[in-house]
Amino acid sequence: MNQKIFQVDNLHFYFRIIFNNDKLYELSFSEQKNNLMERQLSLKIANKSPSKFAKEVQSQLNAYFNGKLKKFDVPVHIEGSDFSLKVFKEMSKIPYGKTKSYKQIAEKIKEPKSARAVGRVSGSNKIPIIIPCHRIVGSNGELVGYSGGGGLLFKSYLQLLEKK
Image (cartoon, rainbow, N blue to C red; front, side, top):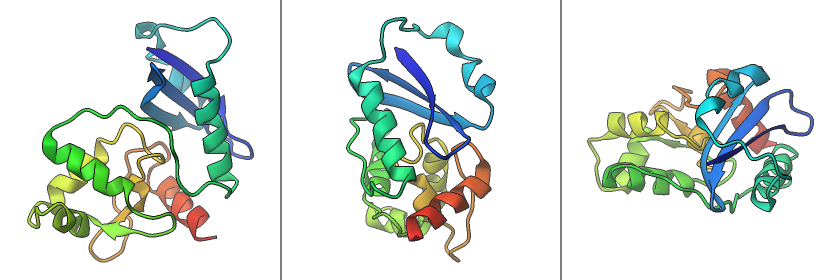
C-alpha cells in the first residue's frame, strides 16, 4: 500500500489517500495533519516521486472543492458483503447536489426494511466524498451521521458546496 497526505486548495483540511495499483482504498481527512499520520507505521511509505494516480486523486479533489467537478472517476477498491456493495453502488448514483434518505436507498436496493443497515454501511464508508455518503440524510431530511472527518458540520459544508 502507498499513501499520500496533501491539502486541497482553499481548504484547511489535510487529506490522506491510501492506494495500490491505481485503485483508491481509503480517503481520510482532518484539520490536523498529525491525526492522519498515526497509522503510517503499518504502511509502505513511497519515497519516490508521487504517483500519477495520487496526483490525479488530488487534482480531482481540488476541482471538486473549487466547484468544477461534479462526478469523480477515480477507480476505487471496496470490500464488503453483497448488501454493503449494493449500498455503496447505490450511494454512488446519487447526483451532485441531491440527497436521498437511508430509506430511499434501502428501497432502491430492494431491501425496504433495511434503512438502519444502510446507515451502518454508510457509516463504514472508507472513501467519503468520492463515494458520496454526505448525500444521504434521515427520512425527515435532516443530517444524521457522517463517516468522514469533521462530522456533521463538514457533511453540511459538502451539501452546501454542492448546492452553489
